[in-house]
Image (cartoon, helix red, strand yellow):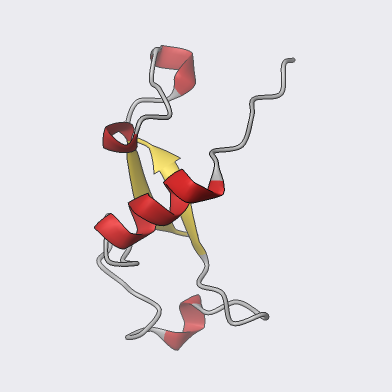
Length: 69
């Protein structure tokens, strides 16, 4: 199994900012839902692909979204 490169921090930040640090699935944001804050006070948000690599998706910003975990 080949390990993929992580999405660069610069792109991750652009996606988070575009999505207003809000989960695009449920609409929660750390400001409104403190339980989304991690131990280090970082939101438990991740960057996810609309179309996964396995189906030809890319790491382009238009193929990425913010989701809570």
